[in-house]
Length: 348
Image (cartoon, rainbow, N blue to C red; front, side, top):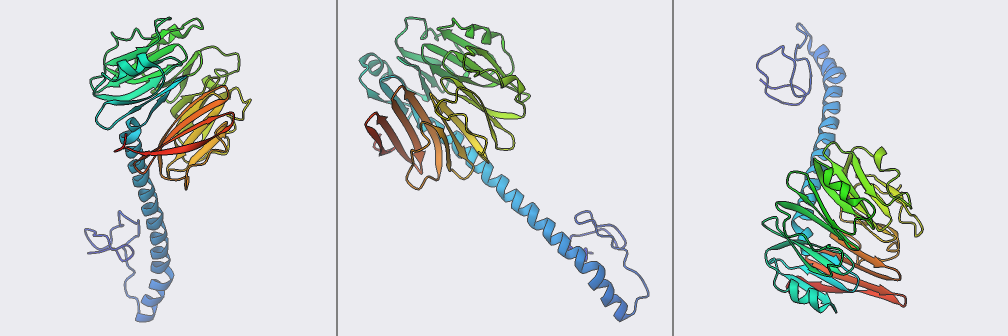
């Protein structure tokens, strides 16, 4: 038989419905009038409450489905973007080769040979590439051994900034090389790390338990608040500030706020973070951009459906790239201003 409230199948009359919790012990010896009153006073309120709860559950399930779908798109499309160095940019094509833009002939020559690339990350004058086999490639300036990455194996994430290179392997261990004068080398002792983020001479590590480790320069308090963070699911770093995405979609910041890059208290429903010098950017689950700092006034057309954004800022120059509905938008700005240039993946 079926429950009189939610119509779920139940084994026998008199049982409590497992789906809505209604007690199916229908009073006996009721007159027709009393039965109608019972339906009106007992059953119908239960039906309304069940429909309300059902609607809430369905809406929540739909929101979770959309969030999973969107996060899946982020993971799928993230490698379609790239990275900015001091005087160059590198973007990953869908076939695993890379597109180089800039004047550094050494990097251009070396990256032209790369294949099977899924991610790139640039320092000031060097760039790292991660291939499908977990191997790390490098090109560019190597004055501080920032390109000595050839023995790094089973890598799942790379990060470069300034004259430092870092990587995370599949077992949660951290590799780091280059300018280690601020003690960045101690990050090699970390374990069970899920993600790393590299600032200017400081590094963050997201632990499996949702806390965050940090080491390096702390002159701007970029590491001060980090030990207090918990329930963190993503991290990012600018040159002199640190960012954490919490499980509830809010964002916390620590460090330099000269350009307003730490003004993230009002951000909500964020699913991805990015930081650069004086800049913070978040993408919410609807694909909308949230900005603080130097990029606060930069607008994408329609400002929605953004899958990924990459920032690069040095002094008065700014650069950004955003993937919107299969088209790559590149922004460059100098002291005189800037504009967006849109390129399709096919063209690149």
